[in-house]
Amino acid sequence: MSTVYQEYDDDVIGKVYDARLVRRLGVYLRPYVVSIVFSVLLLMGVAALEIVGPLILKSAIDDQIAQGRTDRLGLLVVLFLGSLTGILLMRYAQGVLMNYVSQRVMMDLRIQLFRHLQRMAIAFFDRNPVGRLVTRLTNDIATLEQVVSQGVVAILLNLLMVSAIVVVLLLLDWRLALLMYVFLPPLVVSVRYFAFAQRQGYREQRAWIARINAYLNENISGMAVVQLFNRERENLRRFDQRNRGLLNANLRVLSWYAIFEPAVLLFGAVTTAAILWYGGGRVVQEALTLGTLVAFIQYMQRFYWPIRDLADRYTTLQSAMASAERIFQVLDEPEEIVDPSHPKHLRDVRGRIEFRDVWFAYDEDNWVLKGVSFVIEPGEKVALVGATGAGKTSLMSLLSRFYDIQRGAVLVDDVPIDEVPQRELRRHVGIVLQDPFLFTDTIEENIRLRDASISPDQVRAAGALVGADTFIARLREGYRTVLAERGANLSTGQKQLLALARVAAFNPEIVLVLDEATASIDPETEAALQRSIREVTTGRTSIIIAHRLNTIRYVDRILVLHQGRVAEEGTHRELLARRGLYYRLYELQYKDQGLLDAVT
Picture 1 (cartoon, one colour):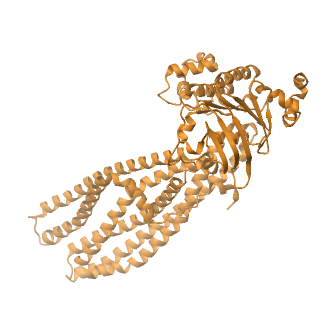
Picture 2 (cartoon, helix red, strand yellow):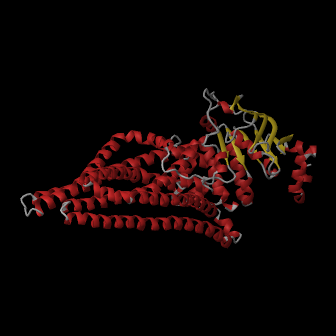
Picture 3 (cartoon, helix red, strand yellow):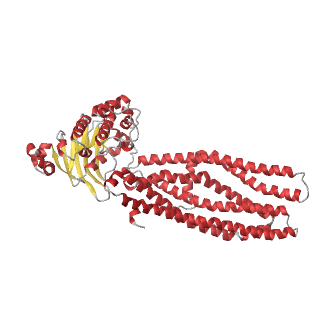
């Protein structure tokens, strides 16, 4: 397979029955055991009535019609209709009951999967495309729902029916039963072959669906870039490759199924012909009653229908096992970033930050940070500068504990952050990202992130503090204005202001700011944002990742990172006077604007 699709591959092939997976699914079924037991009892009633129906017909033919009597014929007709009505009612009740159970079970599983995804480390999302994870929560859960609501129950009913019919046929006439059983071995072999042939097709179906979902998510999210660089035709070609892959996988499954259905019908027709030939001869010889032959043919039809349906459920069960395997693979992924068993708590947070000989790598031995050490005192404003890849953003991620370090320690108020519960740590750290993420909700809810403990008055105070209330007041619904997906109906500067208001509303002791996004806005908006940043960082320990060095003159200290190490440290003027790395970075940015000479 082409390596272009390697990152989207799903390699799980479902077994028809996996005891380990069934046991794990049983945990989710356990709360509904009463409903399941009642459903099984209804199934047993259905199977019993299915067996009784042909016996009633046999009695009506042999004991009434063949004898020229009608004294009990009306009663037998009523019993026959009653059995059909009973089957209908019990199937309906059982179907409603199991669908209720399956919906509840899938809801529980979906909630647990979503909860688990929210606890996963950011590194997990670096490794897994969004489309694949969405497939787990949608397609795979839906496949599993089918087998819980219909597959397992139908398989149980079919097994009951087949077992009961085998016994009844032998009791009716063992010679006819043996004749029918002659055709069973080739039928079983054929059914197993066809079902086995569909296995690869189902695996490919799921893999291609995951690839399409991942590709769609990526392209729709990046549509502006696609259109800007005229990549529509090439992206359509790549999507067509994935779409055709799914088409071919679907066609392979359907072609096998199209062969399988007529094959089972053919076996049924041949068996019926043989029974009619042999049984009819015995009826003529009066060695067999006509009612027995009719009942036998009825049972035989009921026998082949479960066989055909079992093969159908075979593929459904196999597909469900594959989906369950993938779902549990995600659930079994270690959280990586875990809370300590005996946590320490941050009391009266002052905001002192210390990086003590920190070594960190996203990939093993590819060090991004190498022995970084520095201290930021409470209330101090520090800027991080350096070339792309120097490790600035990594430091921010480590302080929020999105990743764990390999060596050294990161401390807040002299407490190692890996000894503090994640929720507690992050409650004291606010981040203004370079690309603020806004949800499809009101401005008010985007600022307080649906936290009911933050009142509307606090939201408005936060908006006023950063200057966001100016543009919000111009909106028709004000703070009740519903934003488009990712805030598409706002400008870049407005989204940055909402991100700053969000931090102000949560009022953390430590603020992390990435100023890269301000490079794409007009000077007036940038000046407003810089004022807002100063308002938010006042009185708080603040770390600012600076890409334009002229915007960080007001900070207390600047750390210059180079190749994963702290190369220089000092104030803006001190570093320029030193004429080292910071001076060269500043010179590259501002030598044509006359700022360098003015400062030095």
